[in-house]
Length: 175
Ligand SMILES: [Zn+2]
Image 1 (cartoon, rainbow, N blue to C red):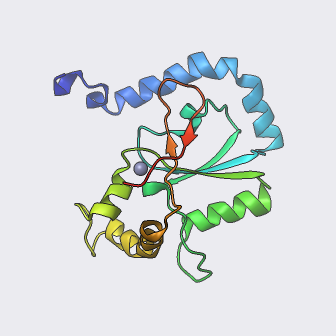
Image 2 (image 1 turned 60 degrees about the vertical axis):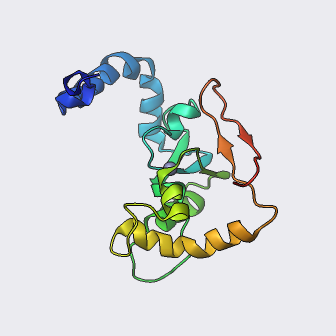
Image 3 (image 1 turned 135 degrees about the vertical axis):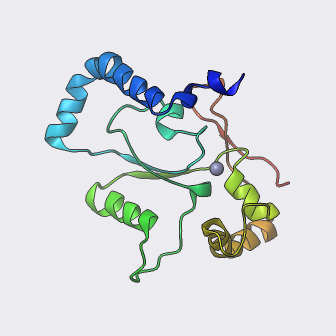
């Protein structure tokens, strides 16, 4: 595939085309749902903390409709340590809102195979450096990594979105 054949080569036209497709095809079929959400507000039962990875969209792999999932995404689906200071803590704010305001019943931390963020933390590969934001994340994850590495019972949870509508979470041995 040459570069010109890639749909995002025509940015922002491809984005605009996608929005037009959404408004002309999907929105009409879900109009009542969107109207209800607009009038009553959202009340999702599930919060998902997922990775930014473009291949792992929670709404897509869980086949969720509008208003069903409250989602926060960051590199490597990290949940930071609770720090009630003056810093900007986006994930903590999302957790606080989900639990205290939306009263979600479940919180899912959605890991995935081939995560570049986790690989950077484990293998210390580019673009991991002390001056980069992802490098600073590594410092915050180091204690978790040490616990994971030293735990005989720790098992990563693998989600396999391909081939099935329902993600499969299975234990696998540490590598
Ligand atoms: Zn990832």
